[in-house]
Image 1 (cartoon, rainbow, N blue to C red):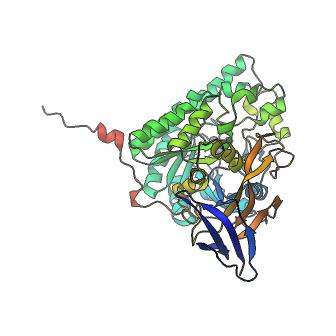
Image 2: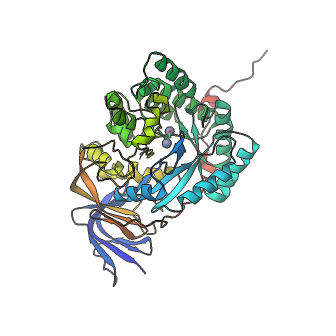
Image 3: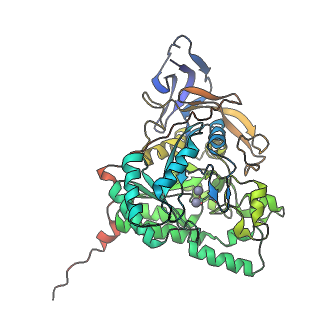
Length: 480
Ligand code: URP
Ligand code: ZN
Ligand code: ZN
């Protein structure tokens, strides 16, 4: 039996915090109480002056993703190992079939790639095309394979973009199955047009990237997806909300009673679009991701969304390409592989900018870094809570510890760090995965293949949302 006792810390859950010891045995939390005794042979961690929180869950990563003609630097081992060095103990990645590729074939491919994961992991399934086999396979994935969320890219025309017909068909099917539809909200037709218009102005460098994807392009898609979900009566989760326009679309819908959820990336909370005006191509290109970093002002709206409860989760969209890969777009910004890292830094930068600034309490931090994700994707309370019976995935958080973030010291195989040079206060001293110390005082002990695939059951009968729009405007028979 492997035992680990975390002694003398303050346990922080999303609902409360309290001084307590935590005893883990064989991968589970078996006791949360005062003055717990260490079983013989147990490893003991002194958490005095520190917080003991659920390990982070990153609901949006892309490890080993083939995308835009190349494949990300981090695979499932290096990416999850980096995550654990930063206190994140589970990821939800994406299976992304090529258009016309059977969903189950892509699913098996990703399951194979993910076998090397160091931490636990799960998958959202992207719907990139539609026919009866897709509809059938969605059922198999939900009912047999534990996938309860489907992703729709409203951008990336001529690649993985979903048109409205596919969105409607897939949302309707997700509702039948009790699965959550999610969207990358950007109007792909507008992006396609603007990329050409910007190029016609002679702008070929990375500064063209945000010009081709302005906030209203995201706002339009968010409003459209939310409206479709409303008409069908299905909840919806909007990934990487980056701007005021889509944050407001979510807040408006929620004020009407619609079940809409929003995810924010650590990068979008902290960085602005000045990064694209760096004369150094490599640095500007390293920041190319979609949606792009936004003009200052949008970040404050995202923080307020998290503070007010209109936005719910934080993620990274970890998708690392190195300088040589980014160079594919040297003469054409639309060919720069889209993606940035951050899976290792998410907790620290959000703690530093969110908790140290007073925007968030430690419990609110737990809500937006693990508990809300676990609840929204049906992993709770196995994940996202420090409680008896939960998986022993924990982070011991030193609120006084400091670190200067850098590509030179990161564990990710990416060669760039979007938070380069930022000194944060509040860092993990220890990370525990399946009851075992996988990171201790700077030493990473990630083990290839140790991570488990997490099945996420479908949502139950109460999943369907009221059809607010259609009921408010319900036609009444005209008396003649
Ligand atoms: O630029 C990004 N975000 N790359 C990954 C794919 C996506 O859109 O999530
Ligand atoms: Zn996306
Ligand atoms: Zn993504």
